[in-house]
Length: 323
Image (spheres, rainbow, N blue to C red):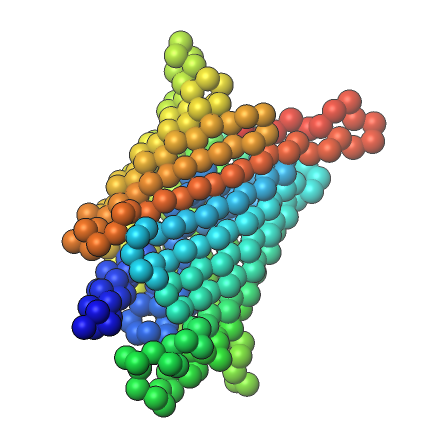
């Protein structure tokens, strides 16, 4: 009886997970689409390779997300990324991402390249990322009493699927106030574990990003409203309205997010900076009935910004292009 109850809750979770986990139509395809990461306004390189090396320094970023806490076999993800400047124009980056949802697993390794330039209007960057992704399910799925054996889909999922993915992006800051970004994740996605590899037929993906920086000097505060519009896979159009606040020379941070479409979402963020170390915590919850079965989603991020080393003959490191 308990097994049937747990199975029903698991199936409910799979259905309601569709806004957050791409292509969750069946047991073995839930994690084969591009990931959705919610800390993008802290570290834009997560969704846009055009940000690679944009600040002119080196940045290390670690993120852990516990989605739908207290729900059995809920998604857990780990992300580690680096991006930094190589010279005055070039940026290089790397990211490793691990995601688990019940018996489903996804492992991604990404390399990114960025080129940045300046004009009278502002600073801009264009970037390209290439990525290897492996999707697979645990062997335990074969022994699940709810699975009829043989099951070709489950068996294929245990063996795993391998993909090559390429994405492009553009990022810019105009007059040090306006922030614009446009990226096309998984613009090319080709399966690699088949003899005759071909590009999958899928929906067109894009993420558009628009922000504004409004300093209030008398209160030593910076207000940043940020709007993000994304269309990923077959999921409905999603719009995030973010408001980020920075205090005390950007040593304290807070933020709030409300997401529209494919299941509304409300999120909160708190953070602090101590020298080069930034620490952030965020909590978000959905406006779906499924929220009553879990304790919301928790996310912890660590970000370290290191200045670019000075070249021989320079008095010091080149100052950051952006904080």
